[in-house]
Length: 110
Length: 122
Image 1 (cartoon, rainbow over the protein chains, first blue to last red):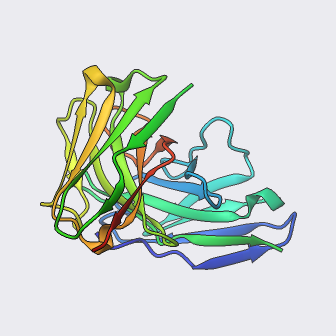
Image 2: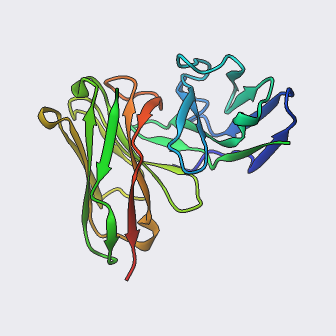
């Protein structure tokens, strides 16, 4: 159960698009259609933004989208807004009823 | 309104035990798998343990396997985490989180509590 690899930080200007990567292995990210993404603002509980690689829960803006290629999943935020500034975490099923999170990425909106 | 309220955290010496509880309301508790996720101060999220709706499937992170035990009481709408042999590296905010389904196959946790802080220190 090694943590998934995410960039420590990404940044973008309002209106731009950014992509956060999440790299695992064929035993987790690449092996199951069970990758999710969470947004966490300081002092708050995480919020589910994407699940099952590409699905968006109701209420999440369609500016947020997920994808995957081989063992790397990605979260793309288009039309960046100030309120998108937060920490983002990916999560994947890792088999045998276990899950693993990524190390987290701090998004700064310039 | 869905509410998950954790309790039981506190300051504990290394090697001692602590039991966390999570009281759920606003949901049909036994329709969903449940999880514990922790976050050390200033650090990222770490999945700790998960349990399916009927306790038929249970899993643990390697970092807590053999020391922590997850359980649930569907009649009381409650989730528990028994933590034994605590270590300083277990210091974290412990969140209770609801899965979107009964089995817990995907990592889709749609409701979270506010967390209970566990500090392991002498």
